[in-house]
Length: 202
Image (cartoon, rainbow, N blue to C red; front, side, top):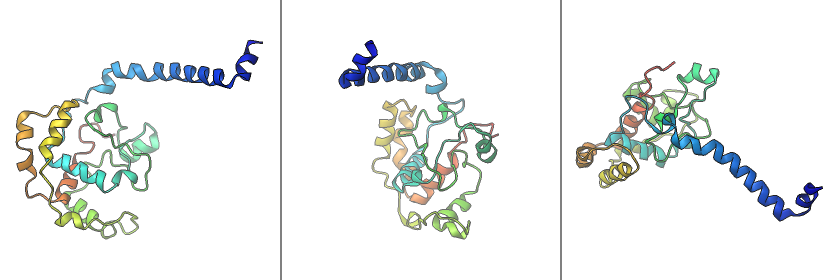
């Protein structure tokens, strides 16, 4: 009756449970670090430009990830609506990743190139002008707010230490690349690049 010894000793049972879960977790997670499919970018993927990177920060700041996911699951209902399911190689340079866990609005993983820049500007300024039933808040201040370029090069340098292949030229020209641009310009540039690395959309 060895199992009775374990069942009567809560500390021992907890220790053995942690051990069992750890072994299971390690056998599932550790191999992913050594598979090319999970840690190499998809073919043809390019790092975000300075303007797209600043747009990504606006996306994070405004809480867009709270209502929009960027992760298409491999289910027919999702691939029929949004396109090719998301693959790990699309997110290897995203720090932090923005997969999201809620869809009050549609998934944005393949939104790049689906609508024009003008459509995005009108939609972000007042979503109900474009989609009358939209629940999305308006972001009119993005039109007037200039991008703060004082840390753009620092962000790119930091991302390079995390494996994003920015060149010295990319970093040196970063501040100038976003100078005079609005946060609306930056956010639209970011949205327009989402999902464009995958050529087969369906």
